[in-house]
Every structure is written in C-alpha cells, then in structure tokens.
Image 1 (cartoon, helix red, strand yellow):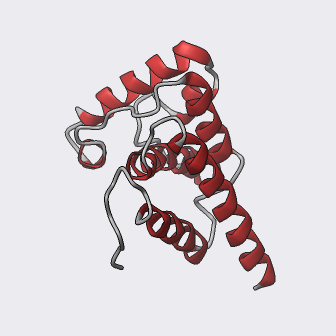
Image 2 (spheres, helix red, strand yellow):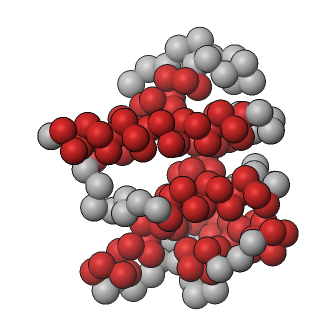
Length: 154
C-alpha cells in the first residue's frame, strides 16, 4: 500500500510539474489533459503489444515507438500526422481521436511529455493511481485561468 501511495504521489507530482511548465508556455490544463490522453493511449497500446503479444490497434508507422524515435520538428510533424490518421480511422480508434489536434507545438515540450509517459508502465498500473493522477489534474484545472473553471465534479 505504501508503494502505491508513493507511486501515486511521485507520478502526480511529475505530471503536475510538467503541466505547470506547459501552462507557462500557454498550454492550458484542458489541452494538456487531452494531449496526455492521446499519448497515454498510444503508450498503453505499445505495452499491450509488448506484454501480451496483442496486435496493435494503431497502424504501423504511427505507433509509440515511431514517436519515441524522433526529436525536434520531425517529432511534431509525426505526432500531427499520427493524430490526423488516427482521427480518420473507422473504428474505436477514430472515435477516441475524433478531431484530435496537437496543442504542444514546441518540440522540446512534446518530447518532455512523451519521455515522462515512456518512463512508466501504465497498462499494469493500479487503476487507483491513474485515477488519482487524473483527479489531481482536474482539481488543479479548476484553478486554471484559461479554463475559467472554479470547481470540478466527479
């Protein structure tokens, strides 16, 4: 239990610190949550392939490893192309990525988010930990001037 609590606290802090950095660059918390969701789905798809031998739900050439291999403007371009392609899929993937757009246009920040996500194994992480991280971001989102929200509901 202590390990779960420590993991939850350290991950929440890591995710929140990056959100704060991005907010300083004009990226609101709502946009951050959206981008985090898109990227986490891709990472968890890669973990599903790696750990369980499942077929990727994401087309070849647009998977997590393809993003991880890039830096700079090439990374931004690949991420934008990936979002566009995934939004056009005629299945659950297309639904998840409906009208998906990149909101992190500075390569260094996009790479930081991707690297942070890559450092963890999200698929096997306890649901309470992921929920606590998400809830923490939503709570802080209520303080975001850009969103204008004063509170959130769960």
